[in-house]
Amino acid sequence: MSASRHPALLATDPELASYVTAEESLQAQTLRLIPSENYVSAAVLEASGTVLQNKYSEGYPGRRYYEGQQNIDRVEALAVERAKGLFGVDHANVQPYSGSPANLAVYLAFAKPGDTVMGMALPMGGHLTHGWGVSATGSWFRGVQYGVSAETGLIDYDAVRELALTERPKIIFCGGTALPRTIDFAAFASIAQEAGSILVADVAHIAGLIAGGAHPSPVGHVDVVSTTTHKTLRGPRGAMLMCREEHAKAIDKAVFPGLQGGPHNQTTAGIAVALHEAAQPSFVTYAHAVVANAKALAQALLAKGFDLVSGGTDNHLILMDLTSRGVPGKVAAKALDRAGIVVNYNTVPFDPRKPFDPSGIRIGTPSLTSRGLGVEHMPTVADWISRAVDAAAKSDEPALSAIRAEVADLLSAFPAPGLPVA
Ligand SMILES: *Cc1c(COP(=O)(O)O)cnc(C)c1O
Picture 1 (cartoon, rainbow, N blue to C red):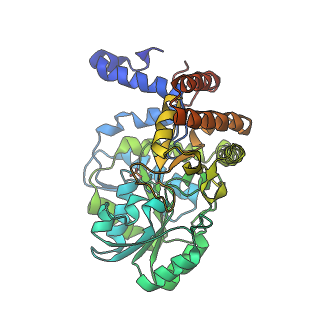
Picture 2 (spheres, rainbow, N blue to C red; picture 1 turned 60 degrees about the vertical axis):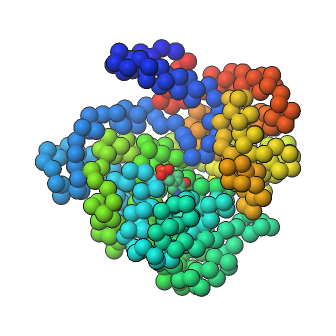
Picture 3 (cartoon, rainbow, N blue to C red; picture 1 turned 45 degrees about the vertical axis):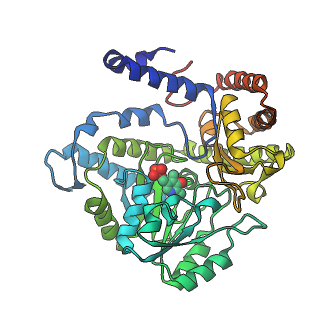
């Protein structure tokens, strides 16, 4: 593989160029199973690396604090129109720098420091920004947290309702980072209505599944939809906030000038392209294939004797509890990495181990589906994972190297979007 894809970079800064080239090889030759990651298309990559990045444009289309916005306004208006069309919302703000600042903007719009806010606990599958203690959202606000049932691994909606009615939070977040099952937005909506809370669906992980019709949409049930653009949606790193017209002003004011300065216009352009791609029939196929692959992979892992939180998956994500295999999540994740399979170690609900050394690993199918792998490949993937976990238990490095070669061999027939062909 040559670095000639980046000739100017190579000429100016060969050291940095070499790291980029090495990362291209790594992403091409490894099986990337981190469920929050994906491969963007070459078109999204190009849009994200344009001279739009040279422009300051504080404000919104038609209402800027700087001149020379004739093209930037069109780019942002196009992204907004595409977001509204794809998700069927009244209003979209495409300026949040990423998912965490998008969520912070929601707090700014609807709560005051010290107010009670409610979300899923981080070790149960929630996100830091849903009021967890180490996050600003858990120290500037009073976070109360719900979880899943110990028996089923599923959200206990009766417990959520009880907590909401006792605590009367200003804001309730639903959604998370390690939830393998469908979120019942209607159930959350009736709880939020009873409790008098603003309901936010944080669909960062599943936005692409929603866009492709492979997960129910929160639109019509919730006050605000928050999402990243770079996970299943397959766009550049960024975020969007979407809402009904009644909340549009509050959301826009919170993002700018409340929280942020100038939007990252090159990212807005990449988001616009990703939304265009996500509106194509092929993306419906993609979203359903992501879920079909995850279900097939879950079946194959169960057949290998693995314990899966909640017993399987409805979406793109599988949470594996490795306790019964006698291998801690971190040890397994590091061994899998050496075997060319990239995952992250993760807490499982009611994990007796520490967050930095938990019992589980979290895997998902968005990236491998972007490469064109199908359900017929999932038994092979499950076999690699099983062999690598066993090898981790025995510190069998040759076994890990052998898997790494098999992985690279299969993947060479499935070039990833946006990457040079090896
Ligand atoms: C990824 C994620 C975020 C945060 O996104 P960043 O872009 O990493 O800040 C927020 N909420 C959920 C549910 C996520 O999965």
